[in-house]
Each structure stands twice: as structure tokens, then as C-alpha cells.
Image 1: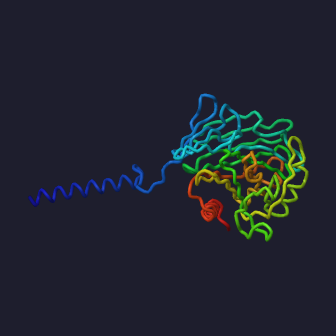
Image 2: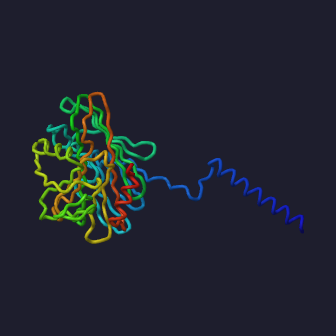
Length: 316
């Protein structure tokens, strides 16, 4: 009986050792391994679909570069995106020059990458002396990353990509993270875009950003905008909160990549948030990249948002 027990013990020890060896060699995932990031899937209309388990919807539907559309928060059934979609490239500027109406109107090509990310490209044209690319990749089930890259054929002074997101009407209340000012709020704080502040509201990174905002780019047709400048940004971080649930939709970027954050007042029917990306010169023959992240989730207090941004773009 003792010999039988000893043999069984040795067999179990040997199996455990084999299992440990297999895990060490990478043949099995460890218990604490991160799950794979969600992936986009090719759709019949030439666009893409996604289902992260939390968020579901479309990207580049029908080949139109409107970012994420028909987005639903699956646990609550709440609609997230507006008609024009989330995280798409809108106005493109170099100094006071505006390139056409919007990148979302331009002919584009796209492809699905092996890791489930999607790359959307716009080739240079005689009237647009640059190649433009945006790479969409899921960070996790509630967060989407976008990397925007420009390759300049000519010099592009004070280049800007105006990244736009239009939300469902429930997300009527927009807030931006500002340094603060005595007549608006004590900062740093999330400032609600009240109608009394103005119609179109923008928080700049610094005085250099203000100079770019005022260089004439926003007077170009169509639909020129006269921005009301808010206190300077504390960080490139903005949120729209749903009036019917505890859902929040958050946009953020690294401080070096974003020189202004803007929005209309609370309740205004665009229900939008915008990030002004780049904001520096790009010499002919050079490339530059800017990043942004969208998060849609519950339980996102103001303090939690600041922590999320610090983790995304640590201060150094």
C-alpha cells in the first residue's frame, strides 16, 4: 500500500513539473495573462465591425471615414455615437490654410491588420501635399486608441488635425480639464461648458496654441468658427456624461500631441468633442505622429479620469 501511494505521489509530482515546464516555455498562458485586445472584423460593405463584449458597432462603414458609428454600450443598450461618428479626422490645417472641407469627405483606402487593428489612409493630392494615416486599435474592451501620422511632401507650418467625435443626444454635458480661473472655477478642475460661457468653447495648451487658434485658420469657409477661449488646459482630457445613466465618454491625448480641446455648450445639438492634434511645423520629407484615446465606461469619477490620463501619458 505504501509503495502504491509513493508511486501515485511521484506521478502527480511529475505531472505538476511537466505543467510548470510547459508554462515556462510559453505553451500555456499564465493565470494572470492579459486577455487579447478586441479586434475589428471586415464587413461586406468594405468597412469593419467590432464587438468588444462591452461596445459594439462599425468603423469606416461603407468605406466612409466617419470613425466609429452605430456604437452601442451592450450592458445598458445605450447608444453612444452620433450621426458623424467618433474619432474621425475632420478639418486639416497648415497655418491659415485649410485643406478642403474635411478629411472625412476625401477618398480613402483601408486595410485590416493581422492583429485586428485597422489602418485608414489618404494619399497626397496636388491640393494636399501630404499623406495621412490613422491607425485604430483597441486597447481593451472599453478603450480605443488612434494614432494619426502625416508624411509631408511640402513644408507644413503649424500643422493641425482636428479630430472630431459626435455623441448621442444623451451625452449632453461636456467637461474639459482646465487649470482654473477665479471667475469660472478653481483649478485644476473639470469645467462644464455652460451656455453662459459662449457657443463654441476651446481650452488652449498655452500662449503659442492661442496664436495658432487666432492665425486665421478658423475664418476659412465652410462654417467658420469664432472660438471663445476658456482657461488653459490642465491636460488634454474631456468627457461627456450621459444624463440617463452613469456612462461617460472620454477623450484624451498626450499633452505633447494635443494643443487644444474644444466643444459646444451643454445641450447644443452637435453633442461633440474635438482634439486639436500636432500644432507644430512638419518639414518636407518628414513624418510626425499624434495619439488619442476614446474610453466609454461606467464609474468614471473625475478623480478616476485624471488617473487614467496620468497612466496613459505619465508626466516626466
